Image (cartoon, rainbow, N blue to C red; front, side):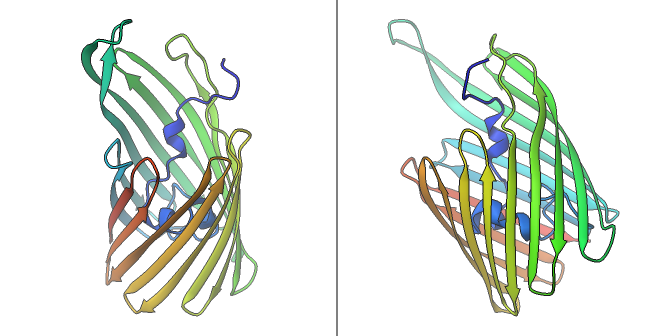
Length: 264
């Protein structure tokens, strides 16, 4: 095991456009039927598809999710890094290869009472790079507490589990605890969250404003030991359909995320 290094780092990437526009973990208290963000609670029947291009196409991610029977959610996440250059010991090119990552997540959520919501999820994880691969399993747990009509508090424990050795190295999964609070007043929602991670703690802030009946404007900031990342985006909800977009600038390249959904 290498100190300070975790495996399956792609699990840290939150797929949905809305949470990324709002500053990632700040959305733990306002998941809006996103079972990846927080497994807690009963959720509307919903199917979503998300695609994103990170760092100007260096990393690509797709997610297909479905909530059904009020309590259950299934998400399939794929993250790929294409065309990685392969060289010999002298630095001469020997072509290229791809890295592929997969997570299948089945979640269950329920409400013991009007104020408290709970949930948990099981994950199957697979990573592959060239001719090497590894797999593992993990658990998530989440809670939401609605203090009153304005305040909601959320907490999640993510990636509790193990992964088999990868290229002769065994690394722990990226275990973290997220805590968040959200304040809602009429058309405005403000949220703040922290990520308790031994290798990369974060403080995240986000806000959402309902400009008109179908249009939501969003902005967020995520701070960590590696710097400050700003984000923004919008959402459109019309009848049973929704579209969300997020944009995150970065010195390595811009990231665009698009999520489309249908409530059935």
